[in-house]
Amino acid sequence: MSLSRRFLILAEGSFGPLSSKTANACIRYIPDEVAAVLDSTSANAVVQDVLGFGGNIPIVATFADGMRYRPNALLIGIAPAGGQFPDAWRPIVLEALRAGLHVWSGLHTMLGDDPEFAALAAASGATIRDLRRAPPDLEVASGRVRDLNATVVLTVGTDCNIGKMTAQLQVQSSVGQLGHRVNFAATGQTGILVEGRGLAVDAVIADFVAGAAEALTIEAAEGADIVLVEGQGSLIHPAYSGVTLGLMHGALPHAMVLCAQPSRTTIHRNPWVPIPPLSDMIRLYEATMDALRPAPVIAIALNTFDLDDRAARAAIERVRLETGLPTTDPVRYEPLIIAEAIAAFHMERVSGAVDGMA
Image 1 (cartoon, rainbow, N blue to C red):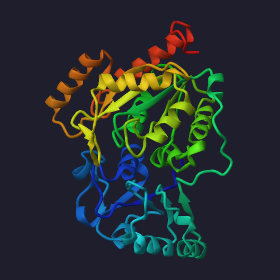
Image 2 (spheres, one colour):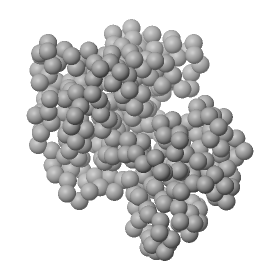
Image 3 (cartoon, rainbow, N blue to C red):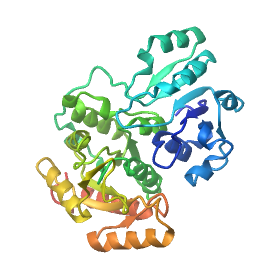
Image 4 (cartoon, helix red, strand yellow):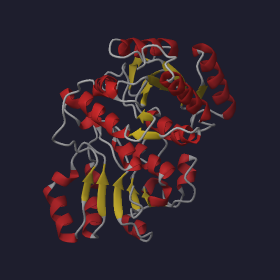
């Protein structure tokens, strides 16, 4: 990660716990690189007031207000369904490029391909970084991950936008503190922004999704005992299940961590799709992996942001009893419970105590 970045995060009308995933991750994991958030609907507050974390990073009403905090880059702070660029934001991006600010975007719309944006960037010396731009030389998967010595752990979910990236980032340092060399493999635009490397697999042509996941996992395994692969989508999501399966088959995890939100009973924006009990989801994920590499679900990461403390703790205990697995909210509470499950699985695997996990 470049410590010289200083972002004005554009989240106009969309800054919130669920509506600004990219902004929120930057505020949580690289707060020193965030100058301010631009959202006129929340202006004159600080991010702590909106998100419940992040401290005193200011929220401003206009681009001019944001420039007072001396940013050198504008970051598109949302990851909307379909990843399209909001037309209403065009004047702000134009203003930023005229001012010489670099523009970072994780949208499916490639801002660098826009002639007007590109011309202004060239004139001002700014750069446009499209985090979802896929490299041209991807290959199909061929099972090369089987040759790695590192233990690969993938987060999977009951739904999208439920904490798969966050769970891995939260447990990463705890796994390291337990004495293991650990790397994070970013598979989405926000993870790439935080980690400084990776590949947005949901922008890859379908035939190459597993190959991209394979390449990312191999890269992350260099110098690592444990690779934490960022999951995407859900096997039961009517729109995004394809990228989930591609990740599973490309990364070939030895184990999985299931992410869920206790209060969510149907797929987000798809109320016609009920979310099955977690025990059923565990069986689905394990059965799907079984043909290529047996990969048990070894822990549960819950997202309890919308529950009070008593309800959150009750949900964690309920899931622990239902599944028999280590369970916690790794953001709200100590992530060590999940880290210990990962470390214990790794040690069993390298000692040969776990059958079929080579």
